[in-house]
Structure formats: structure tokens, C-alpha cells
Amino acid sequence: MKKLIILLILKVLFIKNAFALIEVDITRGNLDPLPIAVSPLHVDVKSENFEGLKIKELGENISSIVEKNFKATGLFNPLKKEAFVQKPDIAHLKPRFEDWRLIKAQALVTGKLLVRDGKLKVEFRLWDLAAAKEMTALAFTTTPSNWRRVAHIISDKIYERLTGEEGYFDTRIIYVAESGAKNQRVKKLAIMDQDGANTKYLTLGNELVLTPRFNPTSQMVTYMSYFRNMPRVYLLDIETGTQEVVGNFPGMTFAPRFSPDGKKIVMSFAKDGNSDIYTMDLDTRVVERITDHSSIDTSPSFSPDGKFIAFNSDRSGLQQIYVMRSDGSGVKRITFGNGIYGTPVWSPRGDLIAFTKMRKGRFYIGVMRTDGTGERLLTENYYQEAPSWSPNGRVLVFYRETKAGSKGEGFSAKLWSIDITGYNERRLNTETDASDPSWSSLLSK
Amino acid sequence: MMFNKNLKNILLVVFTTLILSACSTAKKSGNIDGDVYTGKETVKFLASGVPDRIFFATNKSSLTTAARETLRKQATYLRKNKSLNVTIEGHADERGTREYNLALGERRANAAKDYLMTYGISGKRISTISYGKEKPVNPASTPLAWSQNRRSVTVKVN
Image 1 (spheres, rainbow over the protein chains, first blue to last red):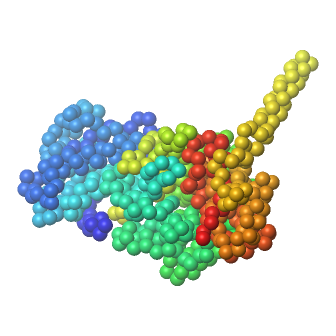
Image 2 (cartoon, rainbow over the protein chains, first blue to last red):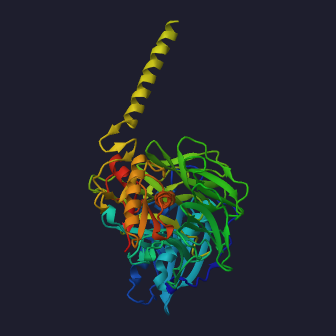
Image 3 (tube, each protein chain N blue to C red):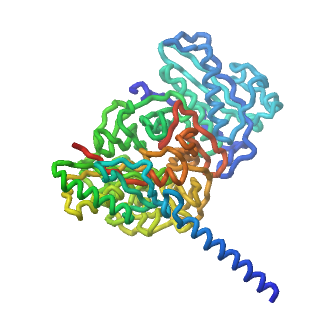
């Protein structure tokens, strides 16, 4: 795990050009993705072997991860390499813009790498082909085993330059890996890169674990575990593997999430059958009761400024979404549409709340403004819930279950993502069945 | 006038349909009453004549007449076996969000516990645990399976 924290030496080679002709609008569903050519990174012949890495293929491998990232956004159309018109090293020095334009590319990514003295040096450039100029360039050094992260960081920089928004490729997703028959499910905490690579299992499956969530400011995770048959909220440091129970509650604690500054956990505590919302300060260990109501109050989620908490309550009869100030005052119901609402999750941009809606036996993932207006349902299915935001607030990841047959056959649980435009729904690759995803912040920030 | 008459006919049809569909959800069909399971298929017994579980309506934790009857039998049994302690497990069906279901299971387990206590069983002898929708007894995705899964189960711990 320690290896994951890498030292990145970022050095901007050239100042960004003030004007660029190409720009990708990500606020609408993009039906006309930007054609982009990602040239394989040129591998310097002076490169040395490193711990079984296939250095010669490294340039190809990095560029193909960049391509996959771009394709998955739905905003870009990476062109086939067979059509490329220049060798990687020459293109990186000076592209023949008119030739690349002939294959209908609008943007070109070039780069080179050198592995020497146990270090991987990478540089890349993004070219605006229509304007015939360089848009951005970056060079950095890291350990060679971090080559996948290099590809994600390059993807983030290019995404940022072309869309004006922060990227979300150098990120990870923590989730619950599921296996076994539907009525004897084995569940483990698992973590993977955003693109499905590097899956690691963090628990053994001896006890039921649910709802892991990242701390937005560190590599800490909070989740719920039935360890020793005592369902409680836990805190896990995924770098050291150390974990501890959160607080000293005499009953079930569940539905944990971090505050945006990462210093508090907000969660539900069930006492005598009634669930209310509490916070615990991780430094001082001070516990505060936030709601006090005879209804079920759960699924709390802080606003990114920390001033408000959205939560789920059935105080009006059925599950609805409410917003209150973070001290518990000013409780206001915000959902009034047909159906029942659960799992409110505040966008990291602060402008929207994602939710699960249930209506007439169907399940929807949707977004609404934080006052409940402007509801947009993004996807409908037999069963799906638990949206989690990409760190830039543009994509939601959630899980979906299929209908089971009379013996539970045909049942599956998978992770899916969808843009908040409602476009670009896709299934995430996971080694096993999966549920309860939580998206990390950018690792290299 | 003609239009009005047609409209009335249409309304009449609509009303009849509504009444019929209301009947069809409320009537006893097989082992489900309303949407509460009334059958014996999944039920085990703490002792002869003492069922271990009760069933709930969707999103509800209120006790039905049948549930109270079962719990009274459990209370009698627990009064006779004074050294016996139990855990009541609360469960939900799969048609709800995970976290809400955890809370709902907790509520159901405590509804059963509270009722046992009104029949003189000490709260110290009864612990509760909610499994939400995590441990379905019937894995099928059917209204019958869901009704069997909306349950609280009294389990002996010693």
C-alpha cells in the first residue's frame, strides 16, 4: 500500500496557451465526441529494464489506458492507431498538423518516456490540430511500477485542458465484493482503480461488511461491519490496514460518511429500535446527536461546505429526503414528487443532490437541486441504488441488481456509472459481483 | 349532453377497475394477507406450537393480529424457561435501499421485543440485531419471497 503514495515531480514545461479552438462541452450529453489521436509514448532507447516491466511496450500500454479513459467519458473518440501518420518520437517533436487533420483528428497527444536508475521519466504534449499549436505539456518523474497512474494523470491533465473541469481518472473506487448464493452472500471490502485495474481485497469475508465510504481528504475509509455480530461503524486506514470501531455506542451504528474536511463521521445510531443521526469528531471523540425524532433518520450526507446535512427520513410516513443545518436545526423536506426517495448524496460541487427513487416497483437514480427542485431521473431499472459522485461532480457510480429466479438463480449485483447528463451509462469491470461503490478524491491532488 | 354521458360511462369503468384492483390487493391470496405472509413454509419452532418468526407488511413494523398471537406464545414459552435468553433478528425485503432497511429491521426486531416485554419478559433476556435485507430466507424476486423475508425471528442464544 505504501507504494501507492508516490512522489510526483510535476513540472509545467510551457505556459498554457491563452486561446484554444477546441473545447469539449461536458454540460450536455455529447453526441459528437471529439476525435482525438493518442500516439503511443516513444520509449527512449537508453531505457533500462525494471523489475519485470516490459519497457518496450510501456509507451503503447500507457497510451492505451489514456485511450480507454477517454472513450469511457463518452466525450472523446480515440482514433485507431493504424491511421496514424507519424512516428511517435517525430510527432512528439513537431506534428505535421495538416496530415493529422486529414485523418479527422482534432487533438493529438504525444509523449516520450525513459526508464533509468529505477525512475520513470515521462513527458507528454497535447496539440490542437486545427490551430496548429501546443495546448499543454507536462513532464514528471515517478517509480516505474506506477506506470498505470502515469496514464491516469496524463488523462486527467488532458481532460482538464479540453473541458475546463478537473479530471477523475487518477482515482480509486472502494466497494463491497460479493460472491456466493443470494441467501448466503459473502461480502468483502475491495478497492480498485477507477478503470477496474489493481483490485485488492481488504477484508476476508468472515463477517458481513457494508457501505464503505472514502474520506475526501485522505486514504481513510469508513464502513459498517458485523464483526463479532455487533453491527458497528468502523474506520479503516487503507495504507496501514489498521482499523477501529467508531465511538462506543450500545447498539447498531450504520450509514457512515465523512464530513467534507474529513474530521467527522456522520452516521445513524439505532437505540431501542429508533434510528437518529449522530456525528463523531475523530480527533476529540466527541459525539453529538443531530436528530431526535421517533422516525427513521438515516443516510446522512454533508454538503461540501459542511454547513448542511441531507438525510433520509420517514417522518412523513414513507422515505423522503430532508435537509437540515449541520447542527440539526432548520429541518426541511425537499422531496415531494410521486414515489419514495432514499440515499441523498451531496455533489462535491455543491449544486446537486443525487438520490435513489422508488416508484411503482421500479428504481431510479436521479439528481435534483439542493432545494428539491429540478429533479432529473437519469436511469431506471429493476433495482439500483447508492449513487456516489466522481470527484468532479460529473459522473455517478451506483450498483444495480437483477431479478432472481425461484431459487435465487440469475441474481447479480454490478457497478454502473452514468453522466449527470443522463448519457453514457456503462458497467464497470469488477472481478466479482459488486455493490456499495464509493469514489475517492483525486489521488494526485 | 352526449359527451357528458360518455364521460360518465368512462368514469364508471374507471371506478369499477379501481374497486376491482383494490379487492385484488386486499384479498387473501394463498399465503399472503394484504402483503403480510401468513403461511408456514419458512417457519421454524422454538418448541412445539411456538413459531419462531412473525411477518410484516411492506415498510411497516406494526404487529399484525397473527404476529401478536405468535409473540404471546413465545412469551409463554419464555416465562416457562426462565434461564433462556433470545436474540430477535429483524429483516427486510430486497425492495428498498440498504441503509433504510437496516433501520427498518431494527424497528421490527424492537417491535417484537417490546411486545414480549409487555407480557412480562425482561428486556435483559432479549437482544436485538438488524440484518436489513442482507439475509433473505427466500432468494426469489417475487412478492411471496419478499413477504417471507419481511420478518423478525426469535433465536435462542443459550
